Image 1 (spheres, rainbow, N blue to C red):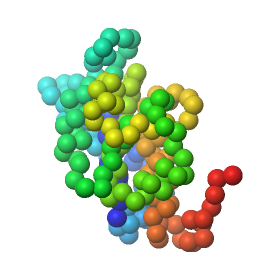
Image 2 (image 1 turned 135 degrees about the vertical axis):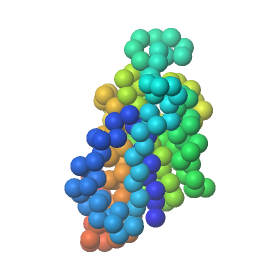
Image 3 (image 1 turned 135 degrees about the horizontal axis):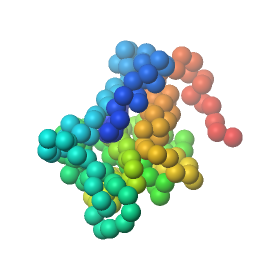
Length: 170
């Protein structure tokens, strides 16, 4: 069983998507496990602040490295685990990457917001930087849903007909 862990500041975004899809059946059958983690739960201070100005300067706000580091450290449980960061500058997600991810025991996904995440997250925490296309989104939640769905359909018994596993991108 593969375990998906998503780190986000908007955990409610995932509620209906995962409860109203084939993925909910896969979770009930214990074929996959999906955990959504609120980054604020790992932040310091009364206000649980997770954003700050970029460490090296620049415009806007980025998610701070400290709560992301704490969250990943608390979550990384499996030896065959990978931490991915969604960014427009990452390697483009494709079916080959989905097959590679489907062989893991755990996939931890960092969903950025605002102007992204502190650059130290990409440099020291993420094993891989992933993009879902040549465009910029407001956050990494949608890419996380796409990766979970794409990888999950490759797990045996998640989709009903095994022949559907052989579908190709044309």
